[in-house]
Image (cartoon, rainbow over all chains, first blue to last red; front, side, top):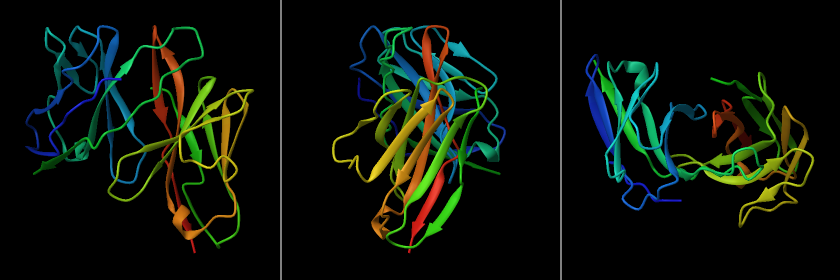
Length: 116
Length: 117
Protein backbone atom coordinates (compact mmCIF):
# COMPACT_ATOMS: atom_id res chain seq x y z
CA UNK A 1 0.00 0.00 0.00
CA UNK A 2 1.16 3.54 -0.78
CA UNK A 3 2.73 5.56 2.01
CA UNK A 4 1.04 8.76 3.12
CA UNK A 5 2.45 11.95 4.59
CA UNK A 6 0.43 14.24 6.83
CA UNK A 7 1.36 17.29 8.90
CA UNK A 8 1.72 16.28 12.56
CA UNK A 9 -0.64 18.95 13.84
CA UNK A 10 -3.03 21.70 12.76
CA UNK A 11 -5.21 24.25 14.48
CA UNK A 12 -8.58 25.53 13.42
CA UNK A 13 -11.02 28.06 14.81
CA UNK A 14 -14.47 26.83 15.69
CA UNK A 15 -16.94 27.45 12.89
CA UNK A 16 -14.26 27.71 10.24
CA UNK A 17 -13.39 25.12 7.64
CA UNK A 18 -10.65 22.68 8.54
CA UNK A 19 -8.58 21.56 5.57
CA UNK A 20 -6.39 18.56 6.28
CA UNK A 21 -3.84 17.68 3.60
CA UNK A 22 -2.42 14.28 2.75
CA UNK A 23 0.34 13.45 0.35
CA UNK A 24 0.32 10.04 -1.34
CA UNK A 25 2.63 10.54 -4.28
CA UNK A 26 3.24 6.82 -4.83
CA UNK A 27 -0.42 5.89 -5.07
CA UNK A 28 -1.32 3.41 -7.77
CA UNK A 29 -4.36 3.42 -9.99
CA UNK A 30 -6.39 0.91 -8.02
CA UNK A 31 -5.73 2.27 -4.56
CA UNK A 32 -8.39 4.11 -2.61
CA UNK A 33 -7.91 6.97 -0.17
CA UNK A 34 -9.60 6.50 3.20
CA UNK A 35 -9.93 8.96 6.05
CA UNK A 36 -10.53 8.01 9.65
CA UNK A 37 -10.35 10.00 12.83
CA UNK A 38 -9.76 9.02 16.43
CA UNK A 39 -11.07 11.08 19.27
CA UNK A 40 -9.11 10.68 22.48
CA UNK A 41 -9.56 7.26 24.12
CA UNK A 42 -12.02 6.04 21.50
CA UNK A 43 -11.84 3.72 18.53
CA UNK A 44 -11.25 5.22 15.07
CA UNK A 45 -14.27 6.53 13.22
CA UNK A 46 -14.69 6.12 9.47
CA UNK A 47 -15.15 9.45 7.70
CA UNK A 48 -14.99 9.06 3.94
CA UNK A 49 -13.21 7.35 1.09
CA UNK A 50 -12.56 8.05 -2.59
CA UNK A 51 -10.77 6.82 -5.69
CA UNK A 52 -10.41 9.78 -8.06
CA UNK A 53 -13.57 11.85 -7.90
CA UNK A 54 -14.31 14.32 -5.15
CA UNK A 55 -16.63 12.92 -2.53
CA UNK A 56 -18.95 14.47 0.03
CA UNK A 57 -21.00 13.02 2.83
CA UNK A 58 -22.62 14.31 5.97
CA UNK A 59 -19.32 14.49 7.79
CA UNK A 60 -16.83 15.88 5.32
CA UNK A 61 -15.67 16.41 1.76
CA UNK A 62 -12.72 14.72 0.13
CA UNK A 63 -10.87 16.50 -2.63
CA UNK A 64 -8.44 14.37 -4.63
CA UNK A 65 -6.08 16.05 -7.07
CA UNK A 66 -6.27 15.07 -10.72
CA UNK A 67 -2.95 13.21 -10.57
CA UNK A 68 -4.16 11.55 -7.32
CA UNK A 69 -0.87 12.28 -5.59
CA UNK A 70 -2.53 14.23 -2.82
CA UNK A 71 -5.87 14.83 -1.21
CA UNK A 72 -7.54 17.17 1.25
CA UNK A 73 -10.18 16.35 3.81
CA UNK A 74 -12.48 19.29 4.46
CA UNK A 75 -14.59 19.71 7.56
CA UNK A 76 -16.74 22.63 6.45
CA UNK A 77 -17.68 24.03 9.85
CA UNK A 78 -15.37 22.65 12.51
CA UNK A 79 -16.66 22.26 16.06
CA UNK A 80 -14.84 21.55 19.29
CA UNK A 81 -15.95 17.94 18.98
CA UNK A 82 -13.94 17.60 15.79
CA UNK A 83 -10.71 17.78 17.80
CA UNK A 84 -9.08 14.43 17.05
CA UNK A 85 -6.26 12.65 15.26
CA UNK A 86 -7.07 12.35 11.56
CA UNK A 87 -5.62 9.48 9.57
CA UNK A 88 -5.24 9.39 5.81
CA UNK A 89 -4.79 5.82 4.58
CA UNK A 90 -4.24 4.54 1.08
CA UNK A 91 -5.18 0.98 0.43
CA UNK A 92 -5.51 -1.38 -2.46
CA UNK A 93 -9.05 -2.38 -3.27
CA UNK A 94 -9.23 -6.09 -2.51
CA UNK A 95 -11.15 -8.46 -4.70
CA UNK A 96 -14.76 -7.55 -4.15
CA UNK A 97 -16.71 -10.54 -3.02
CA UNK A 98 -13.63 -12.46 -1.99
CA UNK A 99 -12.18 -12.89 1.44
CA UNK A 100 -8.91 -11.05 0.94
CA UNK A 101 -9.97 -7.92 2.77
CA UNK A 102 -7.03 -5.60 3.05
CA UNK A 103 -5.56 -4.31 6.24
CA UNK A 104 -5.46 -0.68 7.24
CA UNK A 105 -2.03 0.62 8.14
CA UNK A 106 -2.25 3.63 10.44
CA UNK A 107 0.48 6.26 10.37
CA UNK A 108 0.86 9.04 12.93
CA UNK A 109 -1.93 11.15 11.45
CA UNK A 110 -2.65 14.84 12.00
CA UNK A 111 -3.68 16.10 15.40
CA UNK A 112 -6.41 18.64 14.68
CA UNK A 113 -7.19 21.01 17.50
CA UNK A 114 -10.31 23.12 17.14
CA UNK A 115 -10.28 26.09 19.46
CA UNK A 116 -13.06 28.51 20.46
CA UNK B 1 -22.53 3.77 9.55
CA UNK B 2 -22.34 0.24 10.79
CA UNK B 3 -22.06 -0.38 14.52
CA UNK B 4 -19.37 -2.44 16.20
CA UNK B 5 -19.71 -3.12 19.90
CA UNK B 6 -16.71 -3.96 22.04
CA UNK B 7 -16.88 -5.19 25.62
CA UNK B 8 -15.65 -4.51 28.22
CA UNK B 9 -14.59 -0.91 27.79
CA UNK B 10 -12.14 -1.14 30.64
CA UNK B 11 -10.66 -4.01 32.61
CA UNK B 12 -8.18 -4.18 35.45
CA UNK B 13 -6.69 -7.55 36.26
CA UNK B 14 -3.92 -9.14 38.26
CA UNK B 15 -0.76 -10.35 36.61
CA UNK B 16 -1.05 -13.94 35.47
CA UNK B 17 -4.78 -13.93 34.85
CA UNK B 18 -6.53 -14.14 31.48
CA UNK B 19 -8.82 -11.51 30.03
CA UNK B 20 -11.39 -11.95 27.28
CA UNK B 21 -12.51 -9.07 25.05
CA UNK B 22 -15.57 -9.37 22.83
CA UNK B 23 -16.17 -7.65 19.52
CA UNK B 24 -19.61 -7.77 17.92
CA UNK B 25 -20.95 -6.41 14.66
CA UNK B 26 -24.46 -5.34 15.60
CA UNK B 27 -26.19 -4.65 12.30
CA UNK B 28 -24.14 -6.56 9.76
CA UNK B 29 -22.26 -9.80 9.33
CA UNK B 30 -18.50 -9.69 9.24
CA UNK B 31 -16.47 -12.48 7.74
CA UNK B 32 -13.35 -10.59 8.71
CA UNK B 33 -12.52 -8.70 11.85
CA UNK B 34 -9.25 -7.14 12.93
CA UNK B 35 -7.62 -6.65 16.31
CA UNK B 36 -5.35 -3.67 16.99
CA UNK B 37 -3.31 -2.51 19.95
CA UNK B 38 -2.45 1.07 20.77
CA UNK B 39 0.09 2.21 23.34
CA UNK B 40 -0.03 5.76 24.75
CA UNK B 41 0.86 8.47 22.24
CA UNK B 42 1.31 5.90 19.50
CA UNK B 43 -0.71 4.90 16.48
CA UNK B 44 -2.74 1.73 16.10
CA UNK B 45 -0.78 -1.43 15.40
CA UNK B 46 -2.50 -4.38 13.78
CA UNK B 47 -2.18 -7.54 15.84
CA UNK B 48 -4.16 -10.07 13.88
CA UNK B 49 -6.82 -10.72 11.29
CA UNK B 50 -9.74 -12.79 12.48
CA UNK B 51 -11.60 -14.86 9.89
CA UNK B 52 -14.89 -16.56 10.66
CA UNK B 53 -14.53 -20.31 10.73
CA UNK B 54 -10.78 -20.39 10.32
CA UNK B 55 -7.62 -19.64 12.21
CA UNK B 56 -6.57 -16.07 12.79
CA UNK B 57 -3.61 -14.60 10.96
CA UNK B 58 -1.14 -12.90 13.26
CA UNK B 59 1.21 -10.07 12.44
CA UNK B 60 4.91 -10.58 12.85
CA UNK B 61 5.97 -10.39 16.48
CA UNK B 62 2.53 -11.10 17.93
CA UNK B 63 2.42 -14.31 19.97
CA UNK B 64 -0.53 -16.40 18.87
CA UNK B 65 -0.47 -18.48 22.06
CA UNK B 66 -0.69 -15.37 24.18
CA UNK B 67 -3.36 -13.57 22.21
CA UNK B 68 -6.01 -16.17 21.42
CA UNK B 69 -8.57 -15.18 18.82
CA UNK B 70 -11.85 -16.96 18.20
CA UNK B 71 -14.20 -15.88 15.42
CA UNK B 72 -16.98 -18.37 16.03
CA UNK B 73 -19.78 -16.57 14.21
CA UNK B 74 -20.31 -13.88 11.60
CA UNK B 75 -21.02 -11.31 14.30
CA UNK B 76 -18.61 -12.17 17.09
CA UNK B 77 -14.85 -12.31 17.51
CA UNK B 78 -13.08 -12.62 20.84
CA UNK B 79 -9.55 -11.82 21.90
CA UNK B 80 -8.22 -13.52 25.01
CA UNK B 81 -5.05 -12.18 26.57
CA UNK B 82 -3.64 -15.17 28.40
CA UNK B 83 -1.42 -14.90 31.46
CA UNK B 84 -1.48 -11.14 31.25
CA UNK B 85 1.51 -9.15 32.44
CA UNK B 86 1.94 -5.42 33.04
CA UNK B 87 3.56 -4.99 29.63
CA UNK B 88 0.29 -6.16 28.07
CA UNK B 89 -1.44 -3.08 29.46
CA UNK B 90 -2.70 -1.23 26.43
CA UNK B 91 -5.74 -0.05 24.48
CA UNK B 92 -7.15 -2.91 22.41
CA UNK B 93 -9.44 -2.07 19.50
CA UNK B 94 -11.35 -4.32 17.15
CA UNK B 95 -12.82 -3.60 13.76
CA UNK B 96 -15.23 -5.39 11.47
CA UNK B 97 -15.39 -5.21 7.70
CA UNK B 98 -18.47 -4.61 5.64
CA UNK B 99 -19.00 -3.85 1.98
CA UNK B 100 -20.05 -0.41 0.75
CA UNK B 101 -20.65 -0.94 -2.94
CA UNK B 102 -17.46 -2.62 -4.13
CA UNK B 103 -15.33 -1.06 -1.43
CA UNK B 104 -14.94 -2.56 2.01
CA UNK B 105 -15.08 -0.32 5.04
CA UNK B 106 -13.70 -1.12 8.45
CA UNK B 107 -15.82 0.03 11.38
CA UNK B 108 -14.22 0.12 14.78
CA UNK B 109 -15.30 -0.66 18.29
CA UNK B 110 -14.85 1.84 21.09
CA UNK B 111 -11.82 0.00 22.44
CA UNK B 112 -10.91 -1.80 25.64
CA UNK B 113 -8.40 -0.35 28.04
CA UNK B 114 -6.55 -3.15 29.77
CA UNK B 115 -4.56 -2.46 32.90
CA UNK B 116 -2.55 -5.35 34.33
CA UNK B 117 -1.40 -4.89 37.91
